[in-house]
Length: 156
View (tube, rainbow, N blue to C red):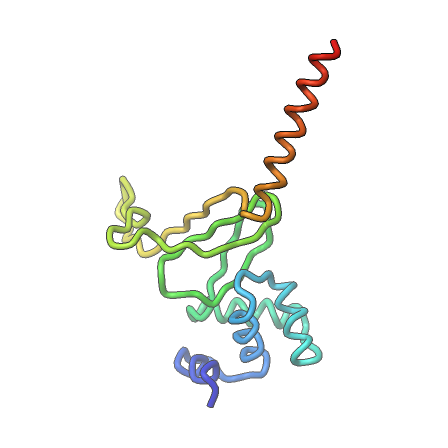
């Protein structure tokens, strides 16, 4: 019996080819959109409707087998890293996403200054910036802009 089948059963879900294919896809492609997952699953199953993928992803999230993150101005992303309090780094230029663990030991992300009576069990922290691939492009743009500005001043 596959690990994914055991996982589904242990969470009260029946084992279906769609669920198995989506769990496999999530393990291969962390931070994947539902549309990307649909394309990936179609390669292994042949046909699957987009609605079936959405329904299955929602069931996996509801049962705690997948996590949905929603970056600002981006489609939802799904991952199979669950059960921990990790966060995400997102590149503003290319959209790459990387996992980052919460602070080890003391978890300031779960210590709100005022919990308003809530019992906090998860924090959703997203760090935005430029990934290593995009950093040279950004610094080249700044360098080129500065050079053009200096050249214009020299001509006037």
